[in-house]
Image 1: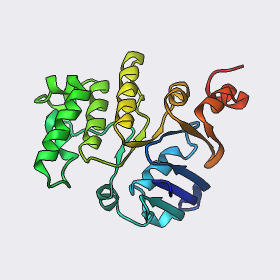
Image 2 (image 1 turned 90 degrees about the vertical axis):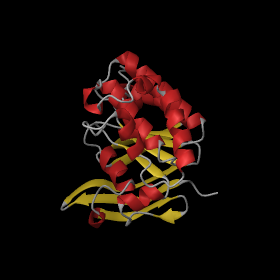
Image 3 (image 1 turned 30 degrees about the horizontal axis):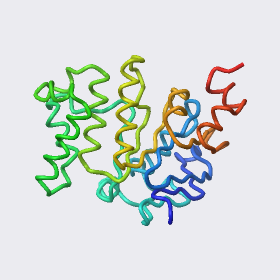
Image 4 (image 1 turned 60 degrees about the vertical axis):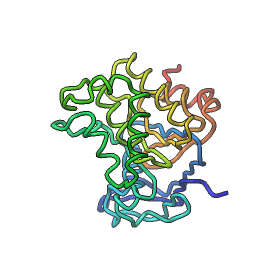
Length: 240
């Protein structure tokens, strides 16, 4: 069986600047995979190109999702195929309520009963959002906004979710809760690929990991083996 997501010799260039350089990456259905690396390594560019947020003119190589090639598709078409993306920085609609934000994730859906069911699931996963359902999202804390962003992605009932820096700017106790929710979403059957600056929690959470440096994949292995790798320890885990 083919992976649900596969990048084949994928590169991305901004004019003369090559941000991603011929990488190969795959995610099997049901997996949780992390992509780690220093700032500027090309991680966010990779994620944004998968979901169709970068101009397709910069792409070379191939991106396949759920058996279809998507590297020349527009973002809304990719979303309709079952791929959701939680952007770095959360990007909630600040003047809309929590519930209005969540419902924006279901804008392509026509099954009103299914949408209602999924809204209940989001509130079950994030009870704090139920308490604040009529509150404007712009008045929420950073952690609560991250819950909204993740919940909004769930409302599309995706086959796979991309998460870019889910812990960015959050307190450790909030990060713990966010990652517990991510694990639960994965257990419920949604495939996940995430970029994360906190390499320790990334490798402790995912099944497999890729290490990216200056636009290239330099390591790929199970997270347990990456955690034990001396180079990874020194560069990303605070080892000596």
